[in-house]
Image 1 (cartoon, protein in one colour):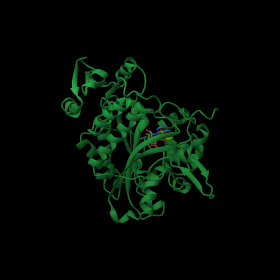
Image 2: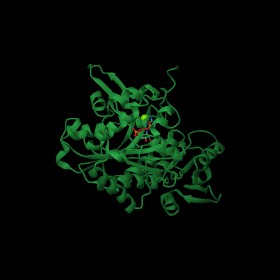
Image 3: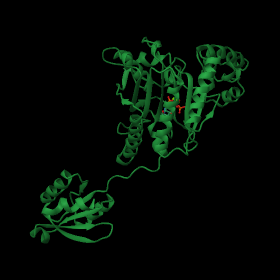
Length: 412
Ligand code: ATP
Ligand code: MG
């Protein structure tokens, strides 16, 4: 393949699309700030261990999707496939255990070697949050409420559905593991190879299989709910009644498990039918053992991540950019640059074509959806004035150069 093609599964964000992405990100960050979150920026690569030891050695991400390479010092490095492991690593390496609870927001590119298709890329972007240090189900409610707020503010409230489940505490999971293993073993030979593998190592992951045959088997599997300890049941009850209290619509989906190994108790996903097979736009859950597993002090956590590309495909009402003022020089380009500079200094958005006749430059102004054109004609120039055309009405005014800022200050 030509080296001038982008790498498969990556894409360039040209200005219009980039605006949508920014808007999605900024909307998420603004909402997170109202909930008391600060932004954390971790490196986009980490030692491979950070991911392989936490995401689980049966997860798709670790077994098939990581971009791992040996760097020039011989270290095994991985481009981050998700945000939580890096945040947990940063929590430990910065000794943040003294500052709990911590509310962290992150955004940025993630890398997974997947089969590219609509809504599935090899470099994609996520926004996400992590709330560390709160054991109570109130944290789960608040974190889900924040997700719902973000989606609502993006105008997606009517397009997404919240599905929620509990994976219980470790005692519940152990009991369920046995029940599920017994059930799945009866169908061992009918399961996909991946699922047969997982059956021995982490049978819960079979529930998450995308294989059609597996799905039919999983449909009749005994539900997790029957294996929950009273404490785990009570925890989930608190989460769901909290959501109901806040008026956040949800359905419980007893088959919902998350693709990564570190989750316990609450697991949730916001899904849509508008994106074909790539229906999950935001997903998260609780991970009380993750930080301890990584070698840090045991610290409960809960968080979610959303795919910016998927959200960006769904959003309709992206606020439009400020309409510029276009400068149309009729001879003296440098005089035009000086006028443009003055207006920009006064806070206005100013566009200028650099070549072509009047007609061509007007066409450019229309294409940029300019609100006004400032025409620097020779005649007005001699009077130290310019012509200002209202591009919506076509009406023109001659305005003395000295009055420019004042004139626009009244209009825009
Ligand atoms: P999927 O089931 O679609 O593979 P996942 O369970 O692997 O998703 P998570 O690890 O939970 O996804 O990531 C959170 C969100 O990030 C997803 O809900 C999705 O919106 C987005 N996402 C994940 N992988 C990709 C990808 N390869 N391309 C674009 N967005 C992605
Ligand atoms: Mg995936």
